[in-house]
Length: 577
Ligand code: ADP
Ligand code: MG
Image 1 (tube, rainbow, N blue to C red):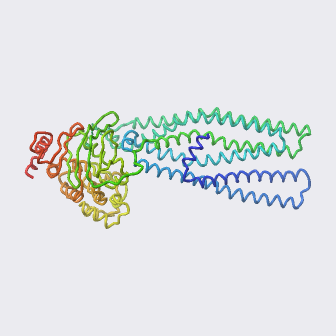
Image 2: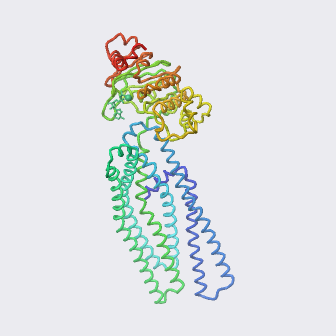
Image 3: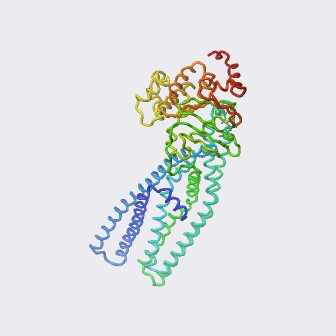
């Protein structure tokens, strides 16, 4: 319990002020509730014990009105405060996690399915969003009211106070038991819910495959996830049933004991009628408040496992960020005995190469040789195991990550466009860029005319992934994005590989606009770009097998010559280009 509260306190760190104000409000609210009861007691006292005087009636009316107003105002702040704390702290957390995910190595995203990450950021955080602050505040105010009632009971008649107190302690023990149970079982439910979210996402993403293979009985994985989630829900409820029943029973038994004992004392003559009524009402109210806190407390297990799941994401090893980052010099890139593994699978072995500023370097090699991996190491998508990568003479691990990102633009074979306007998709390269700047970039990328011809022009909203555009159109939008960013280092991974001949020349022109006067690394397949390169790095099985200018390498037997030969055979007509 204390642990969960601690975690929650840490979780809501930017909302502590509102949290405390809301807590105070809920305490005042609870206090007013007790005062209100006392006002009712005064009414009963006046009715039973004598003739009501005008002053007494006036005082009682004033007290009641003040209480009612106070109760209304404090409960308003209590409610709105707990909702605000819940929403704001989760919003803070989501933004924080978003920034955090940005500096995680790509490996995290292949180890954890996107479904799981989505589930944590949505389902799990939503549970905390609506439940956590409310639970804390209800628990605190419930326990506080119960204590206040209990003290009042003790004040009037210690014996009844003792019975009430013993009942409260036993009740809390059953709640504690319930909390333990839910803490033990909640993670299963949490897991099942995350798996369900993940399976749903996978199902939707793969809907085309599902359709074409006409899977009749639906997606097996999804069906299983639905079943697991259903079972986990039922099992959690079933397991908590007996202890919930037990805590109700405890309250019922002690309420009965209190009625019997007070009535007995009344009959014996040791308790006046007024006191008897007060004791019964206050001890009952103490249990009502306690039960209000208790029923929420048993939910803590679920909250706890949600907080833990979020904590697990946050505990992921981020890429090392230097405490005192160094400024990079020029744009020379130096790879020094770079070794990198995916898990246990070493895919790059002691790769060394030097890439000069403002030169065009082509990386060639068979599929699976490690070209993409090598390119992804430069912007630190993954961190290397051994060796070093330097830009402008500084190890990229000693550079401020944002600065590193500003230096590099990447153009991939598989373009990703956001479900947003074309304008925003291009302006992503330079947040805050005006329409003129965006248009200039689009013109340079040979895509301006196409965009203008669309009914909504630059405001046309694309489908997720840009599926309504052709491969070439998408690629040119992504090149416009990179042109706008205007980073000095450009890395291109087979940017033209999947395109048809028809718009290839437009893309080539776009690429030329992007790469003019830049330091360019290009995983290339076109003979022309390879021959135009200043520098060729040939990779095979994760090792550099040839390194030099196209002229030098053309004179030697080896991967480069083989590569040219096979390319020329495939596209015979380009030989003399
Ligand atoms: P290329 O771009 O030259 O085709 P890659 O760099 O994509 O080669 O792949 C190099 C090797 O690393 C391959 O054996 C591939 O299976 C493996 N590999 C690539 N990406 C991953 C990944 N995310 N996780 C595990 N292994 C990977
Ligand atoms: Mg590749």
